Length: 171
Image (cartoon, rainbow, N blue to C red; front, side, top):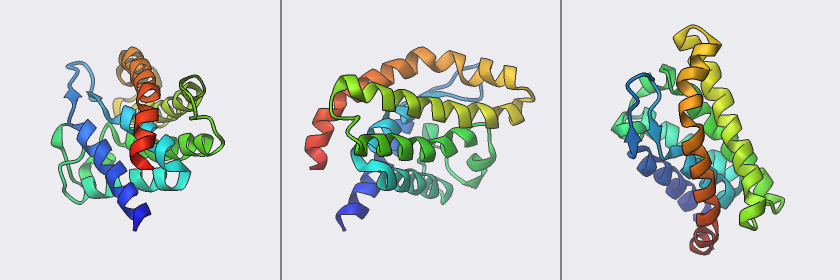
């Protein structure tokens, strides 16, 4: 019961932070708080529960709950411009969780590497999928990576700072 509760709470944290959305007029990908939540959930819940929380998040949004960026929902999101990022959330949470299980989330300094790896994974999936939507990999980098780097560095630092407090809540 504890695992199910933690998985659902993790999925709901991602859904909550997805509502922090800043649309970019030149890109089909908005700035959101989701990546912060994905990194934090992966580090807190570990590989299996972190990935399960992302699967639960995606399933709830696909089922019609307003969980995706800006309150969007439905199965159509899973084929749209941001679908690759959503798939990347699952893998990133798993890998960040795996590294956390090996002790890499114990301090701010050591949490930076798992968070960086998780962010790169999200970009790899997101930009690759986006390239099929916009027609070229170069255009996908321009629209789905470059505008987000500074914000994602800030999110990685914020996740590292929030981690000790979040650990206390989970325990």
